[in-house]
Length: 112
Length: 115
Image (tube, rainbow over all chains, first blue to last red; front, side, top):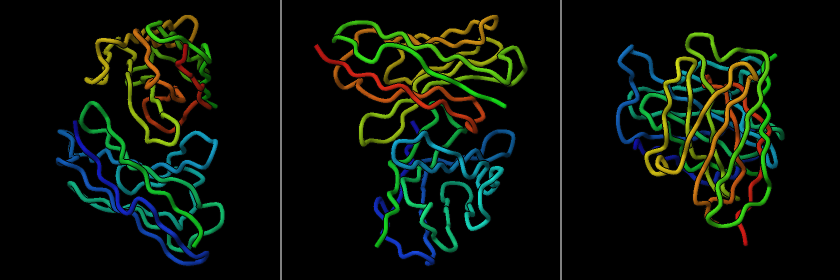
């Protein structure tokens, strides 16, 4: 299985400040069609995960533009330009290139 | 609007078989490229893919659980069913049904395994 390693696992942030989460895969996530199937999800307490980013950097409909995704190959990043109160929760990266699709351990973004 | 809803028992005993049903609307599992899958999340832990079935009956299973899992679809009822045999307390989790594009999830159903 492809191992997805996120860091940090806990991220205390101040409202209005930027935040960044790293996700590294144990092998390249470039599929045979040239696409990199790397997603980012947000999960608030008691809720289902919500996809924010797909194919590394494409934002889902309704996702604020303060969220951005970047990276390539095995190294990816989710950035929040200015953290707002509604952004607190757990963030997961997930690869959809190699079956079984796998998630990272999750990064808990919390108030400092 | 695409929706998915999980249903099934909230409590099962060790060694029993779990059967979960995902009832969906807003899309068809006869459309090329479309699939429905199951993901679980033990309390306080990360997400884990279990199984996925596509419109053409291509099915995939988590290698670590594969022999215990069966995923089937009923396109006439817009349902996908997951069965998991030989349940154990470590299988206690919230089980989610999800569209294969990963952009729509069900609300999840919590299953506790206990005698």
